[in-house]
Amino acid sequence: MGDDHAAGRDRHDVRVQDTVAVALITSLSTLAAAALTGLVGAFSTRRQLAHQLTVARQESADRWATRRDELRRDAYVGFLSACDAAYRRLDRRWVEPGVDTATPGYDETYAAMRAVDEAYNLVLLEGPADVAAAGRSVLASLTTEYAEQRRLADEPGDAAVPLRDRHRERWLAAIEVRTNRRVAFVDVVRSVLGREE
Image 1 (spheres, helix red, strand yellow):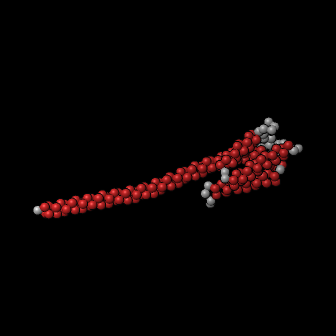
Image 2 (tube, helix red, strand yellow):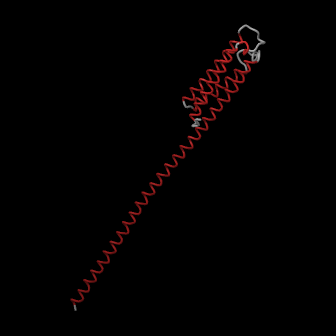
């Protein structure tokens, strides 16, 4: 009977060992599965975060590009508006006799020219370089036309006759230069703002 009892204990020990082994294998499998799931989850989360970061950066870049384009457009429109005001003053000096002669050295046309210069400063800041160069050409043509008007007005002649009538060729040439420089500026601006037509 002692042998039966020892054999029973051995079988019991084997069953306990088998149970412990199965429990250990099950625990290790569960831990391995949990670790693998955690790694896959972490990798997936990392990919999602990287994608979200990329999307956020792109959206931020898009917002900045949109804001930059708005600032540029505002600067360009402001420059063109200042040019229009200066053109009106220059036109008035061409067609009306004795305009702006009350205060030598400073007049309404000069004030309009200063406004163009100030608007050009914004064009310089917003860029890019090709727009700034085209704007500089517009500004130079305005300055040249203004200086020529002042010189022509100081020449001897009938002050009651408008400059346009006394110097028709120069008036027409000034209008042509003015138009060409303005069109060139607008063409460059359109290409920069992505609205080539």
